[in-house]
Image 1 (cartoon, rainbow, N blue to C red):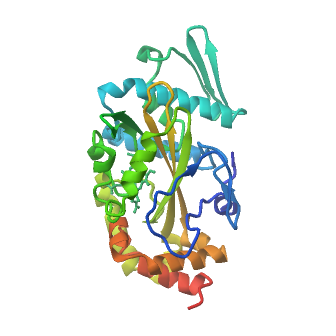
Image 2 (cartoon, rainbow, N blue to C red; image 1 turned 120 degrees about the vertical axis):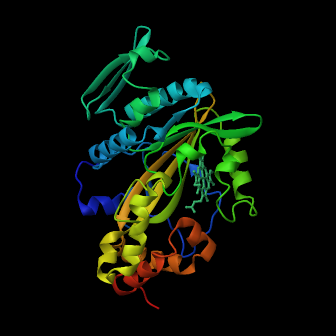
Length: 332
Ligand code: HEM
């Protein structure tokens, strides 16, 4: 775990999402649990990523959830999957962070200890009376990842439970109960290019215990984690104030947002667990790595209009590119 929040650490751990100068949608999945090198450092050695922002992001999640409890959803048939997810996440935390996290059998129950939060608790699996909160609420209060659980039935996957406080321009409260294909309905290109049916087939074949990962990206203004549809009135105008504001401010106000998404088949319930971990890096820090500044410029320059519109970056990409031209080692 990185405990210091230095700028150098943030850059060194950033999952820079572009392997080439052009970005297009694809079924970009790879096995999880290994470290990926970047020109500035590495990321991805653990499935759950705890870093220097742990306490701040946890507090942010708690605040959002208190203001809007609909960020947590669990359809009645998903209760066993929620318990399964909680225990799997605890086991993963204990494996990956043995110095601070402990999970052990205690008689008919389980003992859980999280030293980062001073939590020590004994519970019986499936017995809500032994837990201070519902399983997803309890465990999501101890990680930085958003979680969606997909039920597999009738030859399809359904997003039937989850806790999502840091959505990038979508709403989990709106999507809950939808099929995987319906959830991806608004995304351009991926249907005609068969990307999403291939992803669906791939996910339905995941074996218990198997885990894969992929990345996704967008641009966000002012480093806001919560850009859900629900709070659009709070963050939507930021895009305009950035575009209309001084170019000098762009390097600090515009962020490259990468999501590292894990896909894990839960062994007991058979549900697919989807983890979304969000990383934000201001353009100024991106441009401090010359290869990244140039590559981000090229990707933004090349991105087709329909993809830019869907990502909500039509207004911000041009000022972002202009800023990178002057600060980002870009040769025209
Ligand atoms: C291999 C698996 C997957 C692939 C290839 C995939 C692909 C994509 C792509 C290309 C986008 C558009 C992103 C953008 O332009 O920023 C997207 C959006 C999205 N994906 Fe996935 N995805 C996968 C798994 C999942 C899973 C398991 C969920 C969980 C329910 C999910 C939920 C979403 C949501 C909610 C959006 C935003 C949709 C909206 O705008 O309303 N994805 N996905």
